[in-house]
Length: 231
Image 1 (cartoon, helix red, strand yellow):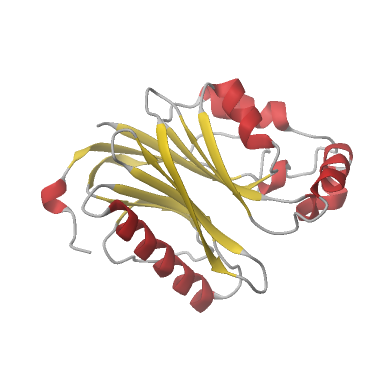
Image 2: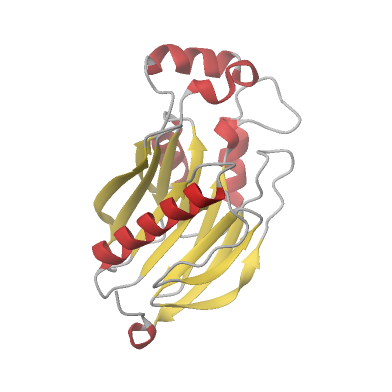
């Protein structure tokens, strides 16, 4: 089951330096030009995942995170003035899947309520693989580490003895998760795998000025159930 997984924090669809307008087409074009089967995305405008899926030929699932009350108004302001409203335009974590796989189940788990809601969202694919994404608490290493371990535990439980991928913005630069192997990352953005071979080192494709986080792509090889750590 060769698999390419990308993790990317979209910075609420904004650029560095600021572009002054909505950048859906630019982010969509970037994702369209890279090879991936599963995209694990964070800080995504909540109205984007379905549109990205339709444009990219992918299925999508999401979980709302913080600042989503009155979302219709937030959306209107974020489309018109994205760099003024910033993260107050609302946000979500999202998983996109393409390449012949189908999403057969979606689960979510709240990892933290304060100072901001932090969530894990994960999907089970027709192959049996579970893929999940997180955006953890920033500026608090102990809190982010605790949330990461909670997310990893949930993924292990959901996957049972099967394979799993957990990626996202962990807001820590160095981290190990019980039951998982680090597959690659850059700064605070990581991908961890369970029961899958890491076929190649992480790639960081060129994204121009989009976001303040670089996308990270890892290539995974065949299932290795014998190497899967016990829950």
